[in-house]
Amino acid sequence: MVRGNVAGAALVWGLVLGIVIGTVIVAQTIYSSTNEHLVTYATLQAFGSSTGYLRKIVMAQALLTSLAGFGLGSICVGIVAWSSSGSPLPLVVTPLAFAELFAITLAIGITAAIGALVKVTNTDPALVFAR
Image (tube, rainbow, N blue to C red; front, side):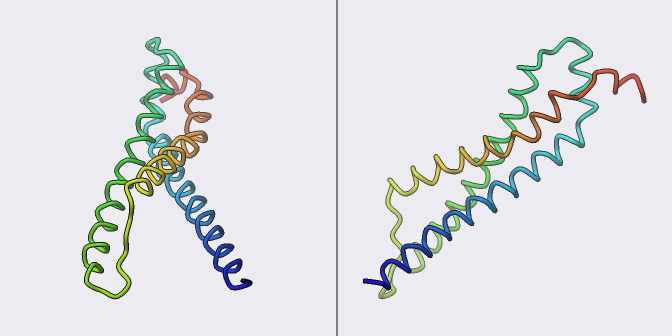
């Protein structure tokens, strides 16, 4: 009985660690891209784009990054599941598990975009004219 609790705790910690690492990687990617295009966001603000529109751009970027990662991960899982189908212990991933992972992936993307959203929202449109 104790071994089951240890295995369950290891599974939970592995899940938490995966979510944290995934969030950090996606956040770093989105924040880096936002920093590279900060002048573009400031230009859009200077031309009258609303903050809501800029937020939509950053969120779309975050969700597309998350979807690309989910797609690549799904392909890898599919390959591993297919290659392990003849083994004594095949990997089986149910549609429910894929749906749950998809929801977690979208949540990671949304959470990761927060830093970039703050950066874009606090950007001064005068940055364009300072160059």
